[in-house]
Image 1: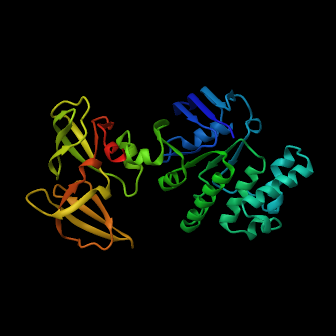
Image 2 (image 1 turned 45 degrees about the horizontal axis):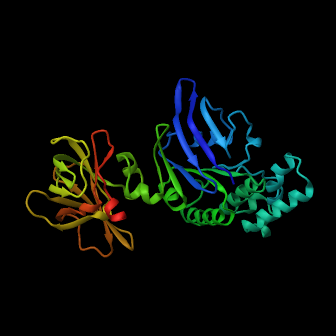
Image 3 (image 1 turned 60 degrees about the vertical axis):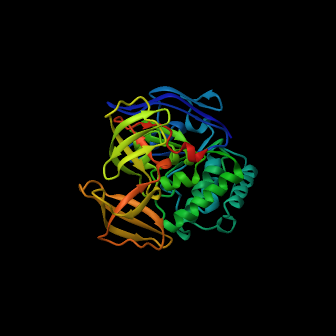
Length: 368
């Protein structure tokens, strides 16, 4: 195990600034997930840690030592890529032993490490097979085993499940989670799938345009997003957003008026925002209740999705803005074409200012 520290890390390709002043601390044995939309720099950041890309500016430390100029083989990292990258003419055993043999490791040590890794990954019965005789999940385990057999201080994963079908992704997520629990290794994992991030991570790093948007546990990012971007990216279905205006605010809370919801008294304050400020109200689908429509504040149900244990109800405001989503347990009495009123659970709503920064103490009362 080893800690990883990034201090003002930057990466520039030509005239394009990819990674911008990233500060991050990854503790011994932590499972940290980099998540964000395509092009946000998460894979580049992982490659900087691995030594596959040079650092333009800043410092990278592993176990307290600056490793900016160290080649990958001297950093004590193992990497699992999106593609399995297995040698088709080699057996599972030979694939897993290949890196050790390149490092001129003693034959007895090679066998010991490969067999120990095979036991952990339940590959013992597959060691004489070649990759073409393996399933996708088995190939991914072999790729993981090849990295693990070198006994790296840090394991790096670059979207390792994106080539697998849905059911196999669920299975491999469980395998990786169990592996981390057994080994206690420091792991850094890149994905664009926020479900993978939420289910695997001790700590999630949300990246946007090469910068760190927020760092925290899955619970923190879901319940207390620091920006509208994080609020919209973490959680499925996404958070609902509605334009709002601040009417008043003090230490006890604030009053706003929100499109389609009318006037609301919220338990959190609006920071230093002035009366009349334009805000955005955010509410997760499970924190919206539906009621019979009254007056002008009505929404039309345009679709109802039944998912077995729960129902998603899609609603269109009278003004025709972005659809809103209500989530509830099945069965549902709501039908397409009905007009309904929305009642948000006020202790769970979120407020964002004009710069999309979170205001007040949304979610903290419930979390406490």
